[in-house]
Image 1 (tube, one colour):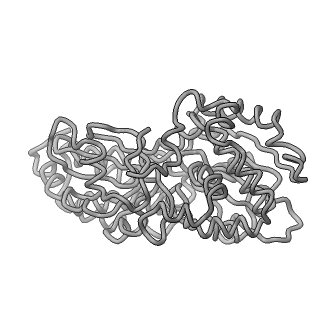
Image 2: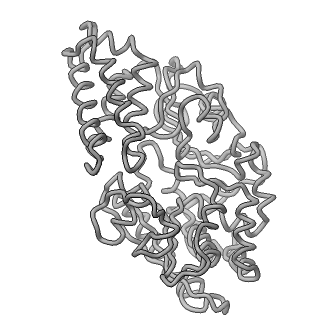
Image 3: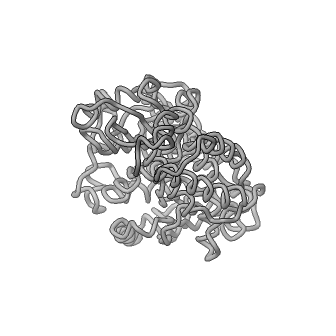
Length: 426
């Protein structure tokens, strides 16, 4: 974990080490649970206002303003309210939440208690992907420490507020990263997205009003409450995006890893070359996928764009969970998009026909192109299929599969045509 923010106001980097896990280290080195004590001196509305001032946008991919999302919870409800942490982190290329849970689990717990107090929830869940075995063990150990020290359970810090927290392990389904698919899985149902509305804030877990937030989003909350929303907002370099962000950088880059950078402070090119040392083996850059495998690809000429939600969206892609995947000239983009599409075809829950059928069709067409059996019309057919998937499904998995295919075909068409002509074979 490294920081290139150029400011001492880093949130995570100085704490990401093996010794930061135990409660004693969190209390002594990070002023642990002091933000919670401060939160109990505020009203729930005051806490939500601070989060709104912070310009904290969801770090899981959608980028929705967190304070606004919390404000959707009805103040009066006959049903219990819930706070759920989305720790599924199944997006290929993303691994920053894993580090938070591994190294600073109490930061996440404190953020959840504060968030629960703000929305009036007394039950919370951390839904963690099944493959994160080590992180699940560490979270459960930290939760036990928090219970024993009075930071979880009944009458937390003599505040009169009760909050119970449970780790729920998933079973390896990408679709459960979608918040309503996650909630179905949490309830023991088939992990597939729900029809919306109603949205989770009105009817979520077990029918009660529910907020679902990403790990990094919730881990930012103690810093916001401790130092104020305005302070957090100024860490970001763009008006609508506050704080720092954790970028997962992988692929053909000299220094892959998790980097903490100010929101909107660097372009994609600066991250690849200045922060991460450039392309592996000093090869030419072919492409960058800026937000995990579901983000439309950018060519090497398109990466002089600020690595933040709105600027990346303006150039036709998305920052997503800030998972930057670097592709060098040595790697075949046709093989890459085939592998990505194969993943989405496998992970589609099958509920929506455009996604269920379309993903399989795209995989089949790409496979025959890759093996020298493609036809010239296949490229236009692929683009046509993507148009019949995008925006026509209950959740974003269809878009996640279609967007990359359309962008790869559009921007690297000669690479596909070489396979169709027979110049290349898998």
